[in-house]
Image (cartoon, rainbow, N blue to C red; front, side):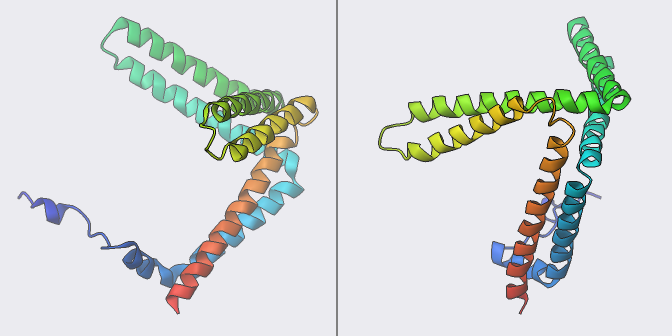
Length: 195
């Protein structure tokens, strides 16, 4: 039996207000999730080296999974050129994931170095974009962002490799805490709509 297109798609709220009404009664769950993220972030900051190692190991797993997927897609390639490239890329991803798991401390140093270089490059690109903006555009904020990104990259590189054991875990902890406060803020807005 073939269903009409309208019956096959789930019902959607008519507006953002209707969507907020549907989830506002669950504000407590959003607040609890935010509190959990804050607690996990604080834990990451207390055990920053363990958080760094955990971050690196998760990245290793993701690299290995991506490698296996790339190899699987490569085996289905229709041309030899694509087959070779995809298998090669998959083996590289898989090998990188395994190497990360074999030596997570060395991997954290490599990832911290890449982060510093990436921040420097991003800062340079932002400076270039700021110079290309029209003179009547608010370029000051773009310059400020470029300067902050470049300074952060320079700080990461200046303290490398000594910061390799703590930087990624610290960033994870801070990110979790900020996300937690964001979810709690969202829950407080939903609570106002629920009342």
